[in-house]
Image 1 (cartoon, rainbow, N blue to C red):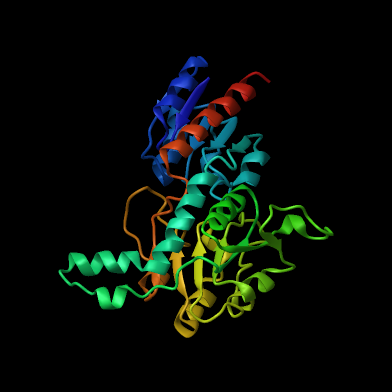
Image 2 (image 1 turned 60 degrees about the horizontal axis):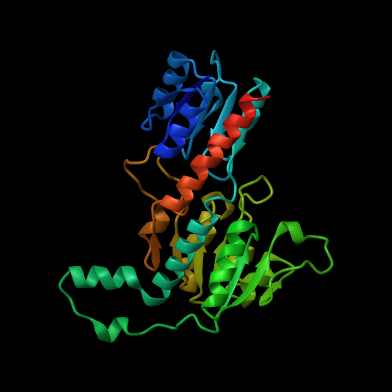
Length: 311
């Protein structure tokens, strides 16, 4: 069995794959045309990627039998194109959720205490305690969570430790009478209902045809003026033009870890109109990028390939 790894992948995972008796080709900088060429020239049975996009053009003439995304979600892989060619696709949902939750809370605190602006002023040689000593504080505020899978649940735990009231909406609660959730968490009937009562709105929705553009003007206009908005899920679940309008007209403070215009490589030029707006801060799609999360994902990839190879 030959395995091509086309993204950064933990050494423990590479060792685990070798212990399965596999030939492991580790080429973490592949993407686009170079990835397609490597798939053709190295003839792997298994392709492992993390955030690198895999489209149907890479399948033609390939020997691939399995693609594993070392992360949650499958939106970067042409799943239907793979299945039409008999290629199985797998991923590792939920294993980076604690990392995502930790970053989410960090971004919420950064918005409230204006940490990036504080740092920028100090580095510019300007002491401005009068301005930056102003903050609302999070205790007693309301956090709304859209999407209540593992990541949403981990965020809720941490928000409750901050003394925040937590409201949630999830598609999996639709049609149910009284879903069971943790004490201190309230299920709402719609995204709009969550937004209307939230001081902070955080997104943890998987990207599917049903959630694409789900958070649009009808949700954003229900937020209070000056509310905080955080997206560590997927950029495509938000109507970007509606969010830009809400930042300009409703004075929202926004923190983003995901963007519609993300480069396909781990480094490269980047521009997104949202990040240029005042009151918007961002990180480099690093929600699940902790050592703990990546080690857990690496071991899950080994398990997936081991079980697949034994079929």
